[in-house]
Amino acid sequence: MYKILLVDDDPVILEDNRTYFCAKGYEVICTKTAETAEEVILSNALDCVILDVDLPGESGFSLCEKVRMKTGLPIVFLSGYTEEESRIHGLSVGGDDYVCKPYSLQELELRVRARIRAGRAAQPPGPLVYGSFSVHPASCSASCGSKSTDFSSYEFDVLYFLARHPGEIFTPDQIYDSVWKAPVNKGQKSLQVIMGRIRRKLYEICPEHDYIQTKRYKGYLFVPPEEADFRL
Image (cartoon, rainbow, N blue to C red; front, side, top):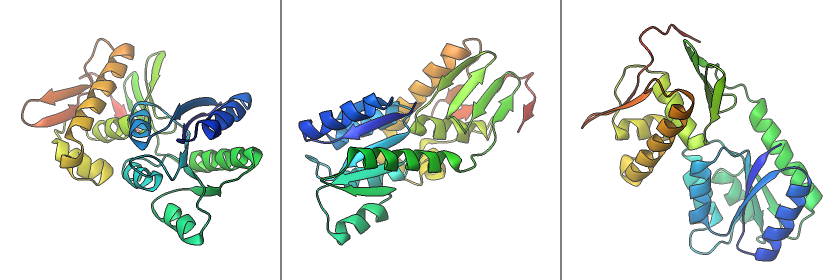
């Protein structure tokens, strides 16, 4: 089934939504702040985020705008702000839908399911194949022989970009500019974390080869096995 993130600072709403979606077969992660939500999005392969607008600290609008620079993950706003201006703002910063409180849990679930299906219906690029190693955009995963691993949207965007340019070295600012259209000074540390996670996951399925390598003072590159034939 689908894996979703619920972000709301109201514990009653959070628990009600969690209980309902779990009963429908969803795998659910819950958090109460935008800061924690961003960490979850960074480290998990999610299908959708249900995001409250009025959060402590950073707002849901701000989080959505930040995440939108990096991933096409469906985001459904859940808000007590019913004014047309708020709904328009939510959609303008990258939200896929806007549901006003109070709301029907059944309708919310149907909207979430529709957004997930719409996102999956878009034709993703074909897989990249290097011998027995493959990178799969349709599922944000990679496989090596009979083993496979999933990536979060953040992680996969970086892996796919590097894998499309085997042997080319990219600095962190080039990666940010090419993958997320964002300046490097907003996330140097985050990129290092992402690279570490990508390497760890690839090592679990391909311990015999280091696909993502670092050139000191230069940047990162994807290195396929020398004997591998590349094909799309």
